[in-house]
Image 1 (cartoon, rainbow, N blue to C red):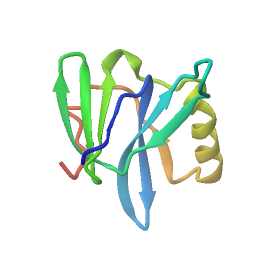
Image 2: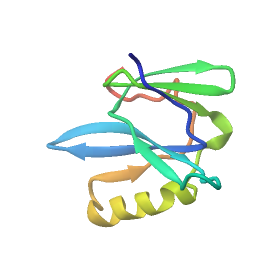
Image 3: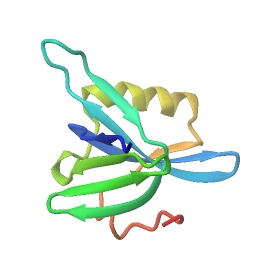
Amino acid sequence: MVNVYNPDSWVVLWMTHKDQIIYKVLGGWSSDYLNGSSWRLNSGIEHVEQDGDYYKFIGSSGSVYNCHKDSYGLRMSTAGIWDGMKNKYPDQVELLDDCDWTKFDFGNI
């Protein structure tokens, strides 16, 4: 069974681990009156497809992140997570600028 996620906001991170470069989607969901804000970090981008106004990021675990093109950026649900990652691993993580992700060279696609 494939897990499919539809974040309210999202960014792409460049990360290194054991001399390997990994690109990941950091997705966030806004809070509502029943649930607090939440976030997920995908397993690593393997492939990207465009579907109308959405990018479909397929992860190494097989999960799919459906990310609306106009929702790129940090929001309350992900800003603190990003700050923590950047402070703990300043030379191992970078937030990438938005672009046409179907044309981005991830090196593993």
